[in-house]
Length: 468
Image (tube, rainbow, N blue to C red; front, side, top):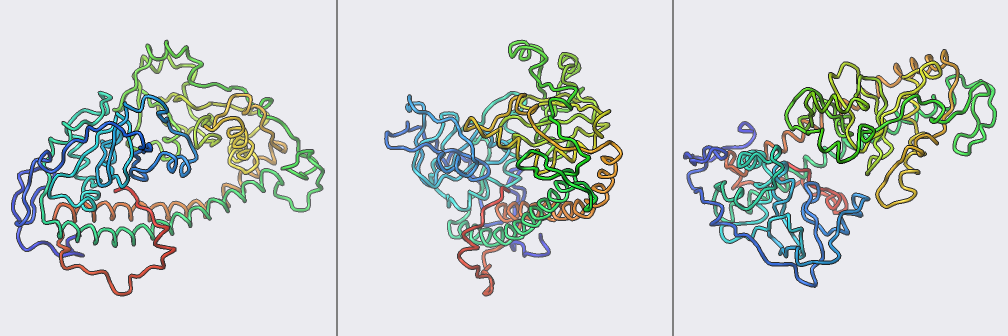
């Protein structure tokens, strides 16, 4: 960062660990002298707001439209809600992970949130970056053992962290610089995300064709009797998951909710076994945000222990219907709530063939349709799973299809991996740039946007911030 941008002419020790050295013209103050706590109850005319790391503080209706899911709304007893004003900041339940959120609307928030009122020395646009910066979040985490103790951040935690004071024009200039530079990075991220989307669509199309039509374009066809499948190779059969599965279970097979609560303890640090959630499969088992259980809990959950090769299916929420195969050699593991675990008859189906079938459009469409058919919150039950129809050939042909897909998809997977690596590097650069600017490690007081940096209004309007 220092090689790209100049440093301030002179620095001094801040006396604050998370800030380190600061420009000689900056000072440090206790955060209580810069922000107060808003304690006003919600007003009758207030609309409810939701604080999220992804969108900041927005109206609940807008949040539900963007996410396609409902959130809990307080319809009566609004006296438990809190009023907030534009340019307040909100400490949410997840602030220990993603920082504080900038509020741009008047409305009401949950009583579990803490509203902060700027008092002095505050340009909200600058602090919207500082409160989401990596050094500040780490300092916030150090104020309490939040994850293990299940606590929420309070004003007392916030007030333990000293903040930098610099002139309002300098704050506004830093925010202006970051708006411009992060927007450029966000555009590059969006391009890579679009590329990944196209590659994944192509990947799914290749899989779907192979697991419903086979590899021989000259094979005789016959009507399948299923509208969405159409004609299929005449020597193939159609079955349901109910006839092909040998095991279908979930977390609650181990006991009642009361017994599970009494016998299973969740841990936020590595222990005897990992509790496998959908997010662990989507992001990979090396993600830092895992949940573990001790040996006693693992033994109690023996009916849903995972040895590798099982098929895991999300049954609640936006990802309901997504299938994943449990990796082999992942160590001791057990199934988390809100998922099904299935095994299939290996005398009938090659495991990798059914893994590809589960990734195809035909199976995914049936599960998504079932999940969204009866409630606002997507949800699947075991009967939905068992009713899924699929086509299949003999095991020898299944193996041929598996070999074809393994080889064909290598290029797609390599390109997806490269694009994701580019996104990760761009996000790291974004995080580092914000941290450097808000802690005074780079001097952007004389910065001006390049003359050729204009973006068409429609493109600029489509940009959204990626959390630092």
